[in-house]
Image 1 (spheres, rainbow, N blue to C red):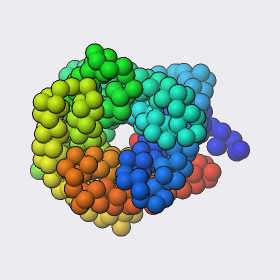
Image 2: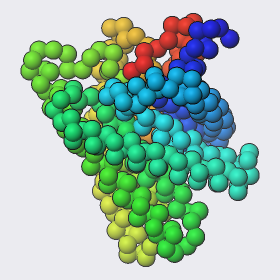
Image 3: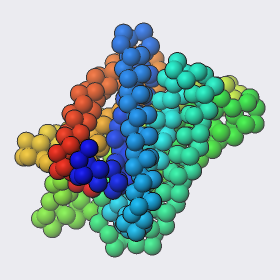
Image 4: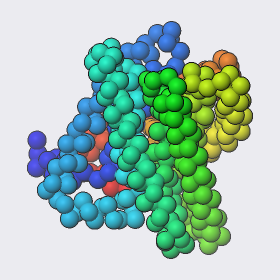
Length: 361
């Protein structure tokens, strides 16, 4: 290993964890789709193994960075530009934990896999709540003093991912009060994340409008990949509303479960329409940017998790509505995601090996 590569892995910034997020979501999406589709189980298993390896490597490198370069690590923690990406650490734990709970039992055994999954969910949820609270405090304290950007969503989205993955967690809880408590907690997380996300998206929209009226670029050219981050919120929220409704049938009365089911369908319909429009828009903008020579950076991992989240959300919505069309969209999103993941992963590895490292933001 070259000195440059070694240095890379002892100076890990939190946004590197987006690689674990983007890899884990492929496994989760593949496992969530129709099990009879040939090859999806293998895809889920391969990407679960890759996600575990990536997450373990990043945790080791991150720990080394904090141990050997504590001052720099603290600077990243306090940096307005870098702190939001601590949300990626939480979401990496949650995503890999979810994949472990779905795919891991075939390799680790049921009890071990579920224990690991629940542990990662607990750690990811706790860290996600910390990033959420800190980010909200900073937004209130520094209101109007910073340029609103889509990556501000990163530290407030983890509670939504916890809500989505918490649907499966609730099924492993004892029947009665413990299971109901987890579901209620997940709906609270859903509301917290959605409220914060809407506030940030409004601030971003206003910032973009001001930039346009001032005759400057709506968003910095190298930050265009971050436009995909809101799609992650859309996909995760649709998944959460419908997966939690399905899980409620094992904990609540039929009347209450039906109400939550109806809410999930209504929410998925409205937000899904918004998601389609947003997906088409950011796809056009991204293709145009790539043609103009958008340089590779770690921000390219923003292309992966949001698409995977939309695939999971479309699948959950398709199951809830019984729509084969929507289930087909979920499969199409996964089909598109895999080559995108491969492209970003290869570019990342090449950058590390060449010593020409992708930008930190």
